[in-house]
Length: 290
Ligand code: OAD
Image (spheres, rainbow, N blue to C red):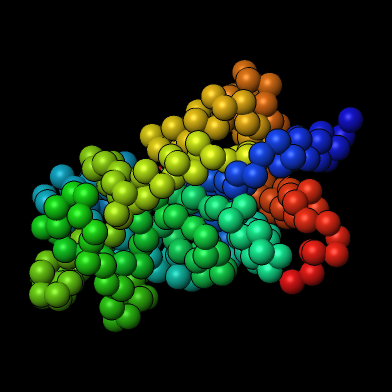
């Protein structure tokens, strides 16, 4: 049986079994073909003085407290890289599926959870989306208490074309404020925890507990909530379709449980046809027009 036939059978079985949402979980890999370096890939480091920092060292509240201008400079550079990138076929296929289902009154059967802060899903047109690690285009007050809804604001356009190595001056740092209060990037840091108001923690877990199936695209499984999502779906015996050029903990779960399939390859190769198969399984031909 070909990969397509096997996946077609898995999807048909999953969607016939119950009416929960098809839950998509994406990571940096879905944006790789847009030219945005993945998080743990060879995308290098950020130099501060004579020292090289890796993302995991800089993306922390502790580093921000110690050197706010340096951490802001790094985020402004990464934001410029994200703004220069365009959504790719993987992002667009998810939008087409969401819109087809919405058009047929079945929008509730689509939900996207993304770890990406690059904003490409949103720019492509995805709406039923929870960004569980925040958004690099936004900032919020530093002093905000964990678990309270953040007063977010867009990062001002004067910072749009930030270059690698460009440093924020103290005067520029002082202008990064929300409602007069010193601000920080609205991104979840390694030494911080998820919450519901800002990172949809409970909502994402509830969606996993209702999902008919899970589609995982381009994530290495190094983070907590995404792994909880995959395990919640697997424990209910629901299948996962895992798309990645390399095996990862998510593909390992499908191998161990026998529920689902691992499609070795890129998002661009597999997301479009998997989305088409889901639309076909959910909607009879006459309801697929949108
Ligand atoms: P990683 O860099 O850890 O993993 C990227 C995944 O994408 C790997 O499994 C790659 O094999 C895969 N990949 C690479 N190119 C791909 C392509 N063209 N198509 C599909 N997959 C491809 O990035 P994430 O797993 O997203 O969190 O990292 C998760 C989180 O770790 C990030 O959101 C960040 C970090 O902590 C925060 O910033 C809070």
